[in-house]
Image (cartoon, rainbow, N blue to C red):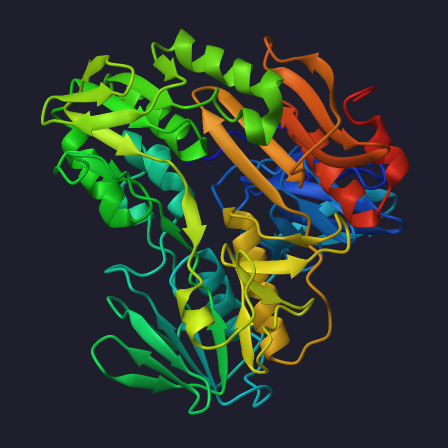
Length: 511
């Protein structure tokens, strides 16, 4: 998470530069007063904001400007050019904003502006909001309620023993030790009550209460179900041994880290994103890794080209794949495969999938279909009850049909949208799905949603780790994947948002 913007580069904006040297709508990296700054021209107006994203402290240089926002090229956070406020997840904290003076044809950046004022508390909305869950959607909803000025009671009920944490890091920097544990908790807004170890056993719709497993209850005027997903467990002899782990919670991550300190050989069961990222992290720690999976890595999600590419990347780092295989049993020292092979292992990480946690919703009589069904405002079939994140299935106007997406940024954006809906703010949830995945020095970004496709158009070179892939069905572009081309991923997101079919048609061909 080290900043890419620490070293000052570009012109000194404090000294000023001719206005004609500043291109329209193109972020210009420079500095003033010892701080890295992005300067943007919009017609006759000029804006200056901090050059470091508040999400993972990466550089905003290379981002794009649209709709009066600066978009981060890495994880697609959006910041208001006028105020520096974070407008879209995964960032929540603002970046700095600076005064700009134009005199005698020269543009100079001055002092920092005060941080955006917290919105005045308002009685708008329900008296109390209860959020069930402690993941990305739950956190974003709580944060947005407070940032939007909601003055009512906000209670977050999480079954885990910790509050919301930065879950994407569990399989990446946290596992390798690059992200210490103190970086993992997400900052809870003032006035939000977080109850950990609080498992909700029942939603009492008529009484408007969330009944906990210990028999206590919390009343609500509006309820947000952000229950996420449940990990699919491996059901074979030995799968309950202490060195066998799944990876979903901070407790899971801590257990794997502790086990990895003394491990020499690990078996990862499953070749999805969690399994492969965990494999990469374990290899960085010097642990030998075997991956067992019934099919080639990520072929169903990303297609054979990217799947084969990622397999080669992992093999180049020493990972051994056992494909077309499954686990028969686990002993304290080995994993036996159904094909008869035995793999030495003193650490086993299982990543074979998840399922939406719809049990509470189903018992409460809410409509479900492979997730909790919600309308465009993320309200369920019962008025006053909303759902967001991995558990929610919504009708999407961009990609058609209903979608349920298990990705961190989508969940955060849904949580924020649900909070605004709870407050009665207008607007439908229309955010384009986006996720990222990291494997050693390979950073993959995915924009859109393609459950099936007719063809994949590739521009560039996967072998060179510099490529754009477009997933198409008929004449429609459904998703764009970029490797080593962060800015193109942003442009694809913008094209999906605007319904710009001409731009979407260009991806994978002339990108």
